[in-house]
Image (cartoon, rainbow, N blue to C red):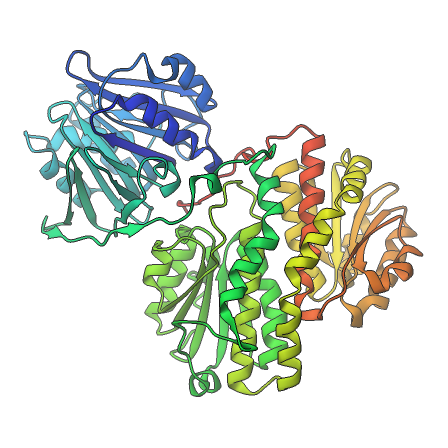
Length: 611
């Protein structure tokens, strides 16, 4: 799985495909490949392990590979190690059909055994190769019919881009549980796994639904339903963000740019939704009767979005006096969850395509729950399958390690909390308006932290050579510690764990020894003194402590820690939005000093579309 681009038109395809793949590098990958057709040379396939620059060098930036139709792929290994032969495109035995694929073919072993019994020889370890050979097995002159027959046989998730040398005037695309978009141009058309790949060339796209097949020529796109191949009319969407939003804009890394964009992204998320001192969530018409009947809220997410859910649990339960459970999407559908028709499931996903989250959403919906999704990508699968959707409007996020998506998801959690509290009458009008007023100040306070980031960079220079770091906190500080720890480990490769500080005495404190770095989050005012006691416990065992708290508690914290980071005071409910920024900056600067590939950390992908 990872990035797919396909082009058909009048221009040389290879340079365009390489450009599109370069715009998908942020998704993470370990190899890349191209398949391009020309009348003189037939179907040409070039693949290479490593960065896209290796492939680009082999084909001289695309100029050595002629043809006006082709597909490209950046691979993140699932089946078979990263290698030239395991890279995509995978090709049929005759060399006339090439396939790029995101997802996993779950029954590939059975298909491989069947094809081997027919004399087919396999050269790769991938599940994708069975698709190429199966297409050739069924191909009798009509590539669309062959694709339809293949889709009858394969099980699992897939986004497919297919080119056949016998019909080089078209590309074929198909999807199930893995994202694929189609881009419309004048005299050219695209298929891609992400709109970022095509935004330089077209802003008009449509989103393939599960079970749909598309045939692209240079002048038209026709979509069919599977299995009956009935034509489908697709709604076009116009992408309104600028291409500059997906470029570094002078920053060394996308992550640095996106950290710095958070004040604006937060403002853009909340500003249109606060009107005359009230929260207005357009399209979310859940009323007080429903909310009073609601038996619980389930928050379903993965990774950093799960950590947003952990913060949300503390905020929502306190404000609404309703039970809130936070579930990892990958576990939710296997735990026989207690979901009823009176359960509200809040599904959080940056991409709106995370396959575990999609599966959990469908399970919750099957059991009768109401689905409210928080996503960034308009028209994404999760957005389309939800009863209600709130978009973060964060713009494209390119770095694998999320920053502004996390912050804007939090912003929507605040807005949901305030709106539901108003409908339920669980928050006094005076307090609710005070929180809304304070919410408007958060972008400015974020900017203040960013403007003063040199001190965090200095602390990173002190601590970057540690190989194991612990985060501790209580209540909402513990939830922020989870995200701080994840950011550090995913881009710096330092072992890091976050613990509820009160759990130290139940085993974890045995890991503390002379020189161990402990990052102590102490901004939760009611538990400040208890957290100080935990700091003293780890200090007495030799730990070096970097503390974080609000400015009003700064002097008290400095008495017990080695170094301290201070954030502006704000309403306790909104503190996570300020506390997380120093954690992001610390992780970024530590990774920078360790020489890590910050935007493309090893083994990780931006959009996880396999289980």
